[in-house]
Length: 252
Image (cartoon, rainbow, N blue to C red; front, side, top):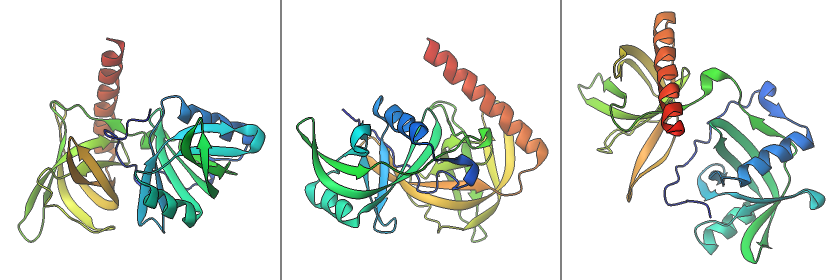
């Protein structure tokens, strides 16, 4: 059963829609979708031009009927609105790699005796592969932070949720930081425990929700702007350190 209670919303722009990430082979697409049934990975399915979304999961892939089966939304009304929209933009992460695909031809269905959403198997699927966009989850203890100092004199100390060479996701535990999309912030201080600090410039690219127990906070995805070579190398060393740490914890 999908764990929606502890699930996090996947940013709508979590993957670049670039041609070289696009899978068109029906066999490759089916393989990726079947992989999503095994965990199952939680999917954020956007509709109504990205204004609404449901958390769902791939329940099954019916290759003979060319259908994809998704779990229903949190309630009947939301599920019906999603079906009537007839187009879901689905984003998730499979083994740490951003995946994005579009479902169309939506209809109510039953799967293994339970309510479900059926859709036509997508013709293509984005699976990002560039290493610099692999997001690494940060440890809960000694986690990195991002300090912003605004021209107005306001300061924000943001918790970093995940990190890559291309950018990061942050949240404000006080829920006071509320930027607009495309806002840019210069001279931010990114603190990397045991690896020092970096001065970085960022641009807000997307936003969503972050679940912290029963509390719901805003989550912001940002891209680094003009990251220097030395800072890039230092950040890579820190990411390698986190990957090695995560691997050792998994092995234990």
